[in-house]
Length: 499
Image 1 (tube, rainbow, N blue to C red):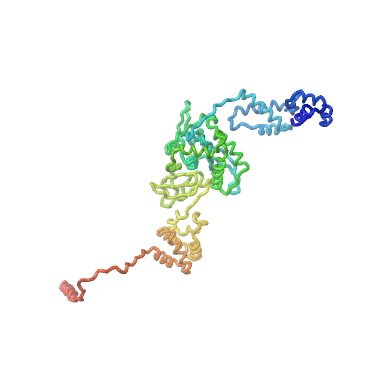
Image 2: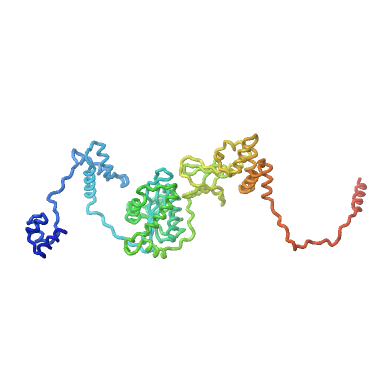
């Protein structure tokens, strides 16, 4: 285009001849005449379609057969063009991937017809929140693994929120909603969801929903209306569906690496704040964060956080363990054989008897592992002190330094098991803090015998009598006591008379 402008300027304005311009540019006179005749930019028109490699030797028929087989499968199970190419290669195909890709693209276009049309949606401020799950791969503690990521998106401001979990169980759904609403600082009127079993237990022929009782309790607590999409109709929550694809490329490619899940979630929260600084898709002069500040005023107050646990009744085994999700957790020994309530949170396990919390553990996602709290088993040592040496709960028990030194001193001698068990029982009576201080003092004074430690504990727990102040006046006697032996003589006379 620049050459055409220069040629027209030389001839039409400066008066140069076509022959001289042809010599200067190296173009033919016919080409220059064409540029003078038509001021439109030169264009190239393909005279024939490009030559492309085609599928041959019957692989086109085989590929169409594989494609038609996939159309009968659920959408999640259909193979991509890459997978179909790999299948043909395994059957002897020696061509490149490009012909396979074009063939599959043409088959999809032929099946799609004229294409599906959608109606643009509009959401008022504070009206709706969309929710969906995605599966991503991350590196945690140096190990590559899959995580489930809960995606939230406020429909008006488009502000995202992400939080990762080891799975999609119901307690994790509840925890994700609690975190998301806390992040937004308010509650919208509706939440648009899919139909997972953790939230929707039944979909009738008329598309009526029966929501899970615990999920409905969450909705009732925050006074939100749950709206479940029509099955296989992801466009009804298209914003969060698009967010899953967009943020996968922005946040999870390449795979992020963190020490643990908490570190990953802290990073995701910061990235959500950063992403809110992008321009809003409908208000190009404003950012998502700025529109969100307006929407925040339309959200209802958050109030008290929902207690997002899933509860079940479990029986305590004779080994003082209860089982949940392939792992076992200890409870105090006095509850052996009883039924207690187990409350599973996203990150912890709480055991309750009546109204009292009897044990609490960090939730683990291993398989077939027992997690002990050694103090739960200390009362049993009163009758079985020998279990202190080889009992599973006491292996690698992390005691305070002074208590650990005293334990080694006792266990080295005969009968030391009994003495250290007595010390542990004192810790249950007076508290581990008091016994730890007494052990520290005993180590400093080099008096490791049990009676000496007991004496130190008694000194720590004995009540301190505060002396009275100086101006206090003590009561005075009005009659001075005098010695009187006549009463003793009277008692002696009475005993003699009785004899």
